[in-house]
Image (cartoon, rainbow, N blue to C red; front, side, top):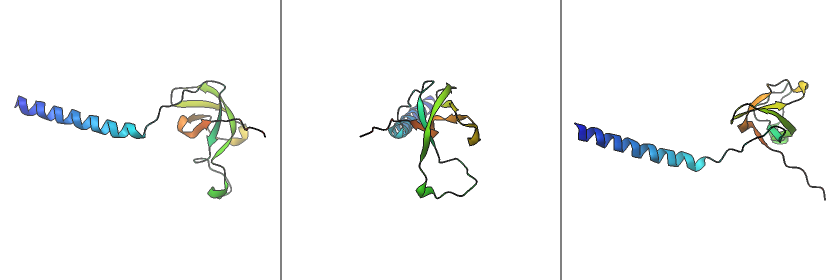
Length: 103
């Protein structure tokens, strides 16, 4: 009975390792955000009064500043009051702002 239990445990560990390897292939290192970093906010989950044509709307909107890093996955933003959205967002909804180079 003990031998069967050890074999089952070994098979489970092997399966767990294989699943972890497959999941880690798609993962990337999370960027560490700091206060005062400039970011752009994703338009994906924002709701507007008028129906916008998704093809014609930018994917991300203007640069905003991080007000506070709540946790490794959540940041609080400095947003205009007219936006009327919750100030705390997940890092999956933001990208690093890159300054435009003038020619």
